[in-house]
Amino acid sequence: MKITEVAAAVILREDGCFLLGQRAADTFYSGYWEFPGGKVEAGETPYQALCRELHEELEIEVLAASPWIVREHVYEHAHVRLHFFRVTAWQGELRDHVHAALAWQQAAALSVTPMLPANAPVLAALQLPPVYGISHAWQIGIAAQLAALDQALAGGLKLVQLREGVLPEGQRESFVSAAVLRCQQQAARVLVNGDAQLARACGADGLHLPAQQLMALERRPPFPLVAASCHDRHELEHAARIGCDFAMLGSVHPTASHPGQAGMGWHGFTEQVAGLPLPVYAIGGLGMNDLAAAQTAGAHGIAAIRSAWN
Image (cartoon, rainbow, N blue to C red; front, side, top):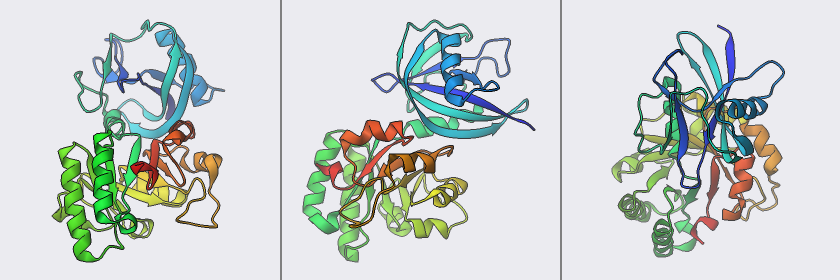
């Protein structure tokens, strides 16, 4: 079956809500909800199609949009490849010309149904926050890390990785248990790096796979949330193949933890993540001021060790 290329817009307001449209009565899957967009015409890039479709459908002009994820889905009538863009700035008043209705929604609390089948993984990805904090109690001490975690959670951090393989076993178990409890109390999701048994025992939300562990697996571990550390396209594609929910790629810039190693830079990062079906966090010498640059380069957000706790 021929693949139909489609540009799809995740139009985002400052409050985190995104726009959905309900398919009209005279279309396939009438009544279902979808992200605005449409087919990529001959001679167009997906970005050009995005801008044209949003002008035709909604009478808005795109001012800022960044590539996000690319997903394929086979419907009864078509095999589509959906190029999702996050649209963060536009001009014009929304005037819909093709949908039966429009609705601003949040991924964790949809009030409209049903959604097109292709969009379930997209909604799950939209629930991932823009910042992924990574612990380093082995460097700064358990008490200092727990205090920093408390402060970051109070400030809104919602996704945490506990990467403490260097800690002695007893200290590691004690720290992970305390950290997981803190995250759960603040409705933040928490993953344990590399240790599935510890992740289960402590009630963590998921498992974060180091690259070596990732490449040894042929299927996704049975956790609600699974992520992976990657260093190149081959590892990223393997993470997508086994069904990871998201990945982490770096280093973007030189870092203190890898002295003497040059980073891939934003251009290299963009090349590595282009066209992937899963969200990817950028890591490596990054702080909160790098978030906009990361998302422009195609990252879902940033992952950070030191700057996440400052």
